[in-house]
Image (cartoon, rainbow, N blue to C red; front, side, top):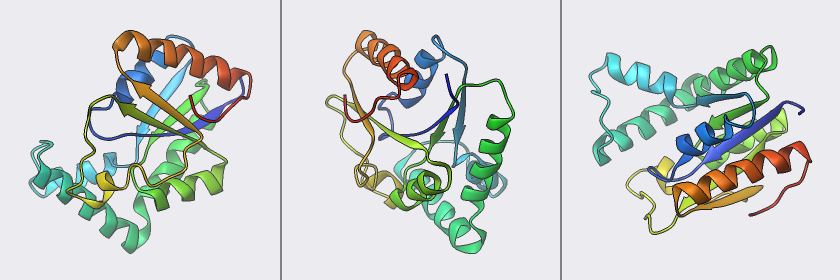
Length: 169
């Protein structure tokens, strides 16, 4: 398989990390989040790692500040992509919420986009990043209803990437 860069998105609890883990059964994957460096900074200034609405808004606002200041999330993502390109991994999954940030990576690296939607799960709307999850025209959309169906979607997704197909499942 040619190396693939996939931007993965979905509201909190939709199954993104589980999907990546399931994909790793079928090929070598790397999992990276554009918010990881933000979380490191947040911990230095007192964030305890919780996922409360207040914390989610704090992380979203902090990410926006670093984007405006020196585009740190995109620069960290570029570094992750360079590391991926030098690795044996076949797919790099990059977690990004904001449509503008997704577009930067798509345009710079010809990445594909994937939205994971979980049946019956409401989108989080208390901060810009989470509220913007649906505001992008994704290459792939996967409905997560059960673990078994998500595994089936993962297997089919890898198969389609290997065969260079796309657009909504």
